[in-house]
Length: 255
Image (cartoon, rainbow, N blue to C red; front, top):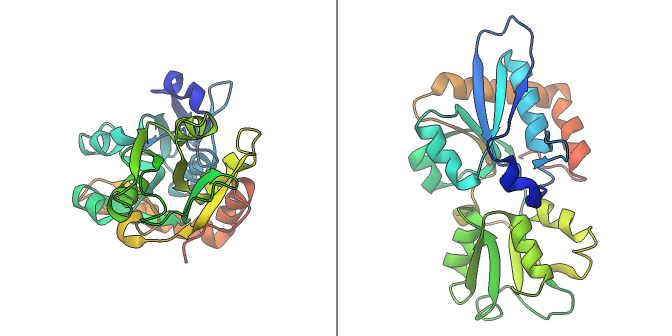
């Protein structure tokens, strides 16, 4: 996502042009700092899995959508005060978040993983990670997981996963914990060549949630149903798989 252009891209809005028959306009909040799900191209445009899924869902619903790029930890507050109408930003569905907002979906599901320098010998267990510094994005389920499951670890919070990866590459932290798809993308880069997954992929619904959902204000049941119906339609038509295959080499469709 990327990240170095993130601050300059805050507030960037992309309007999806749809036929004039659309009677409704929705503002969709995202955070374009999470490649391959969403990032900012050099020309300022937004791209990625979440962006294409948003366009497909809006087209299926027959509505005009404006995608608003902002910081991840500001998305739920913006939704609650009606600055945006929905969130499509790889936001995991968790019990804590369901106290504040509702969700359509989930629209994808991936496991998380730890990465560290190759041959580091680090094991992401309570004993193996004690005293080590783990980089995580602030406001995420990964930060919650490390805090609760690995209390002996030092947690370093970042605005984006890219910033955490840069500190890992510079030797300032020992590990990064994030979505496996996002970190696999980093490992394929020049900066990520000296790093590898440690331990096993993590699938812990208690702390990591039930998959990525579409954030909706509580009580907005009609919009929730529209998103769920549109999601089912693009899955059935094969459009979802086309988008999935474009950005991610494995299926992330929720089971």
